[in-house]
Length: 125
Image (cartoon, rainbow, N blue to C red; front, side, top):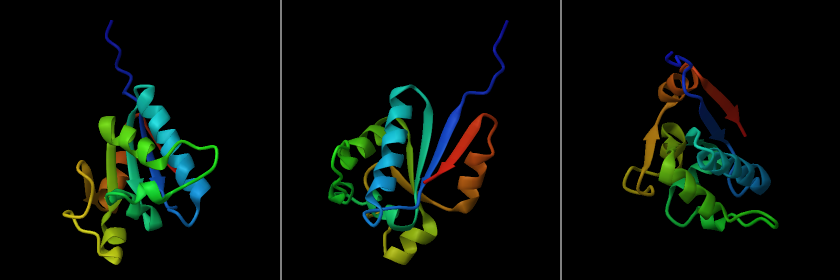
């Protein structure tokens, strides 16, 4: 018998950067934990979180009793998808040439498409 259950996908949207360190670190922690568990992960960086798509910026997030944000982001990049919101990038002057290798810039239509796939679970932090 073939299993026809769609694979579960976790779509995470972070709206927080260094302005809200606990929320920013929490979404990165959840994303990295999901990747480690073998879950397909798509992490969206929006608002101030868009800066984490730029080299060196995740390292600026420091939070006591938390794994380093840069390490968490690296784990997600190694096995998942990381996207910076198109409008958020444009408002901050971030271009495709500015982001980390493996980070893409995409818009709301792609977020909606990913979030509505069978088996997808979307969470916003």
